[in-house]
Image (cartoon, rainbow, N blue to C red; front, side, top):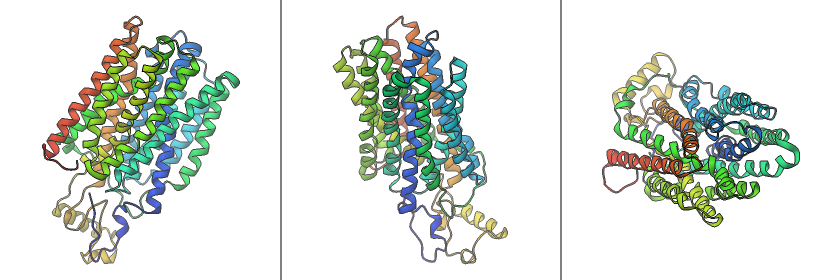
Length: 457
């Protein structure tokens, strides 16, 4: 959506700037947020393998996977809470409080010895901290951009790939030398050092009106929105199985050393990095986020099925490399895709009613009372615009569904591994089929929104 500044508009800063120093600083903040939230979770494959072989040997893979799944579930689920708090002007409380909780919970994990302790510290505490930081940072960053939203979210999401390389490398190099406890303290230090400057530069868009939190029941009759929600649920239901279990697969099935298996995860996340940039560039330049997300989803599903035949070190490295790239297309575009279907248009009458209500409360500048200008949360004169409060709520609702998918996906894959008696086929087919179903629903969303006509979607 391109917002045009109208003659006589009094508060131009109310419109998304779509660029400028402050806006791009939010992208930098988003990069470090995603690095310490999704990047740390994408590294969970290292912890999964280590817990299975050392600290939690008496627990099944599916049981151990609940730690990482709870973490990423809360990362997405907390967005529904954060959305309401941002509307009440509590962005800073969520962002700074979440940063502190993320650091302290990661530090607390260094003293954990039993399963329930890991669930509380690394699963619950770290997950809530991630959710507060990610939910606040992502929702606010997207209010700064319109036309360049794809590349902005792509750059920010690249932090996940960087974190997915940095944290496994730290664990691989240090656990054998200084032990698990001190390695986790080093990880906590990295999180602290990167989040301090992030808290200094992250802020809400100046001049944005605070919206009154309210439930948007009309979302449940919006077919494109519901299909995108369902498509992303199935996509994320299967996508993290590869990140969580590829290290275990390499060690148990291909008999790679722990170092080589960890390097495989680092390779997957390294190939994830260019995938965070190229699809968003294609999206912004010609196709649009949904049109670009669909082929990335089907490519990811194809690679999960190809994993079935990866029986050598060379083949699993090839699958990991291409899988990391394809999955990055999903991870970098889902935000922009959701934002494209959550923008609820405002009619002229509703915009006029809001302006009248604000005047009655004395909440509008004198220049706005002339009727020449004034925008509220992306609303243009004449009613051409969208309700940003409802858009953030709908975004958070999709995040909640993604959270439930991430909560159950990897543990379900672990259950299939347990029941397979050493066979990985059932779990791999589940992951590939789930992502493929998600792709089909996204195709349906594209048709419901624009039909088969060519154009950016």
